[in-house]
Image (cartoon, rainbow, N blue to C red; front, side, top):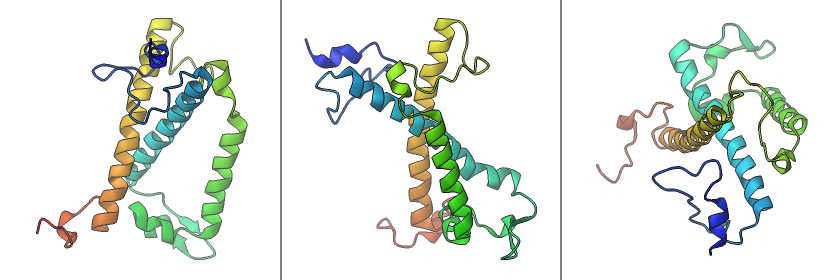
Length: 178
């Protein structure tokens, strides 16, 4: 029997694909490596869901009032959406983002995958006390995280090609289809 069969019943194995490992990272059947990769997938999925919402929300709801930097007289409204915001946010602002990400990474612990419950912080409002309902919600989180990872990369490519966070394809004059 294939070592991959060991992962057929794991969270995230969903129809119609089943267990999908195109790079063969799990071919050795090592459960510790699988759990670490699954915890990483959940983390990246959550970050991608937040990033996708962060990309969309300012366009729909507007931006914060006031200043992102008083000393530079730079307002939130002056920061463009999308990739062009990277160059506009002051270095100290990026330092705060990096520090916050580091805090989140270190405070959550990097060994939660060893317990078998990566990312489970006991917040039953989002999950459930019912095991079947909890498994359904966690499977949905993995699926939504996978979709969000593809979505945010698609948004980045669209922005990079068109120069617009919302992909005005009329601006993409280098298209080989023209």
